[in-house]
Image 1 (cartoon, rainbow, N blue to C red):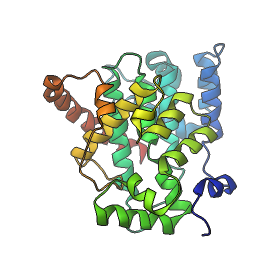
Image 2: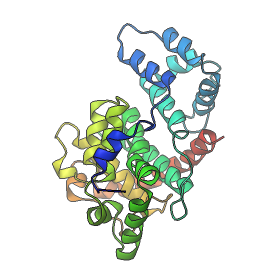
Image 3: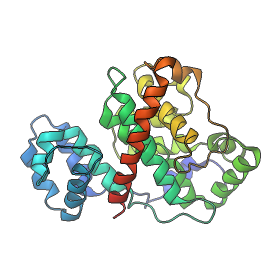
Image 4: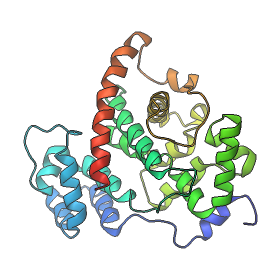
Length: 285
């Protein structure tokens, strides 16, 4: 493949994965202040498979609701528009890419992504102004640029993995030696194409450069960074990183977690990761 600037290549790919029409319609409706739960329910019922999967997720241990939810409209009423939007995105994104080549496990990748999403959602409840649903979506999608690389630049992707493993460095550090862009930039372009929220786009872009992240989005970026760090320490799934786990000073300084609180926070995270596995099994069923 000629050239190493993948932005020009990605921009020419006409079949770059897009979110299903039903999901983009739901996203549009949720942004419309005049929309109702009934409007979203009407759209969702046109895709019984998606609606069924979302109901399974709503009734899973991940949400721990005391009573069974029997309809999408009831789920919207209980959980709210933004949670339904994050579930619709989550339930769809797993179907957008095929299976990975030898040397990179998509099963391990999605396990890591789901773990990061779950931990980010949990941590957001401790961070003023950070949305749990947005944190979940950012956590789930943060590594999507890697899948684009694997699908559309497989030779470069494999070379990046080889460099990362050989030198025991993070994926994005290895990218600097092989290509002229990063999976974070590619994920940012993908988020733009999918018309995801601006804060999601910005955090995707700056996820490996927290100090450079705009002040408004830095708390969300810090939540993502800590979630990635925890999943890396616990070896929860695989992301293509081979460096020892580290959390940047910029990320730590942006969080409202005291060092003496860490043992109790980690204990709660362990429970959350068990729930993440249940979520993952439903998504893949």
